[in-house]
Length: 314
Ligand SMILES: Nc1nc2c(c(=O)[nH]1)N[C@H]1C(S)=C(S)[C@@H](COP(=O)(O)O)O[C@H]1N2
Ligand SMILES: [Mo]
Image (tube, rainbow, N blue to C red; front, side, top):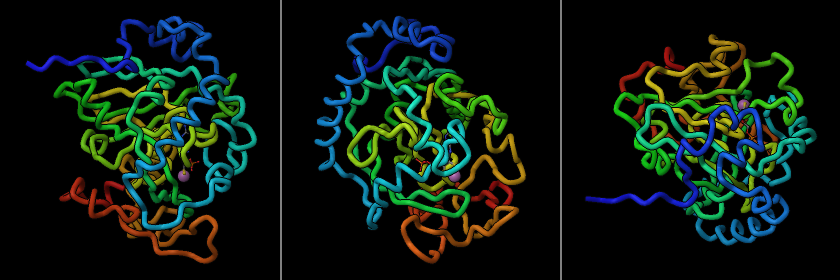
């Protein structure tokens, strides 16, 4: 019989009160059984830079294209919790405190636990993956992410056979997120994937970019990256990952169901009701490029949707 030993970044669910994760950072710390001093932010920052820099050699995916400059990646963002303008997140996200941070992973699983992100970053086998990213608004970037396939985490929690979907939830804290008080979306920001999409090897649980920890405006300290779907599926600053039976409500689908479907696969043949999706502007380039089916990842992911009508399931 195979005996599993827990990695040190895993803490049993019973050691943390789920509510405390959303409501009280001191309770979160206590719940994780971690002394506050051990997680002092400046100390973490310097070790992180070294650890993450060492990972640059472990590049496992290349987009075959030059990455978009870091300056653009970290200053042209969508993160509505910090404002609606593309430059708002870079200007406002300094109020987000990405450390310490816990992600509650539970729902229909055998082994729920709370992920201590700082420990995870220092111990997980991070990979650098250069992925093309395509926003539903028609712009795109090429970003060298650092992360671990979500599937490794899924395997660790042992989902029950009744788990058919995964629901992701962003932090919703008015103190750290100045625009949470505005009803632009139904907060907290939520997203979802079908189980096979979550298990796909391209789906990355991401903690860094360009060899460093995620800038706050890019979804620090931990976010999802799903490169064959429109950018809004790549949910930022995660506090919960839940395995569920029914297709979960997602924030954009809920706010404008005619415009944003559950699947949101990049598809040049299916227009957004108010604009074409056939072309895109790569940030830093003039002119337009053709948008590719599944954002150029069709060879890897088209099989997930065989037999589905992608005009109906947009
Ligand atoms: N919590 C949260 N996640 C989010 C968003 C958001 O507003 N809130 N915007 C999404 C959209 S529309 C895009 S295009 C990408 C942008 O990611 P980037 O700023 O790292 O390029 O984040 C996605 N994740
Ligand atoms: Mo987007």
